[in-house]
Length: 144
Image (tube, rainbow, N blue to C red; front, side, top):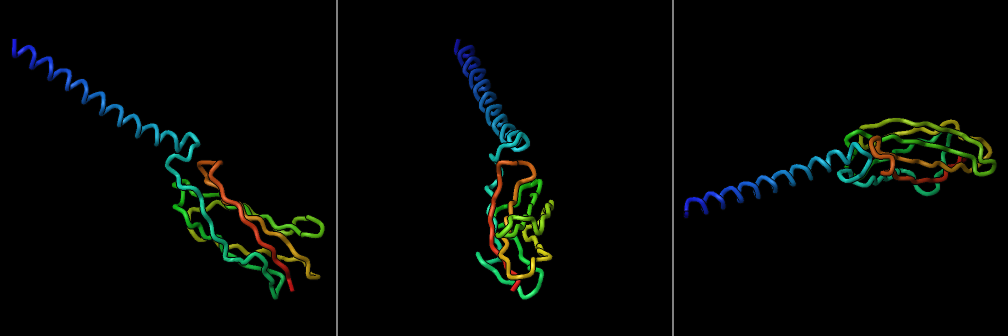
């Protein structure tokens, strides 16, 4: 009788440990699947620092700045969109969209309009794998 109780207890323990192991493994699979499914469960929220101040002046018709990703870079990289428009007419001055898998990204806005016209540069950095993981910043620039 003792052998039967002992065997029954061992079977229950084996089933319990197996079930716990599968739950843990399934959770890891969900997290991995969540990344490809479009969630940010394993991606760090994007954080970016621009080298440009809030208002910049350029002595020439071009202005160079960097967009430095401060957070962990998503495994699939990011898409960076730079859109520059005149403040007076809202006309597009410069626009580029680039894929990147590096932390520091350099852009040169050119040509800036003559006549001391302020332009607003809007920079949007978006995870290539997770469209909802994005960062947007801006600055003004003037050819003086």
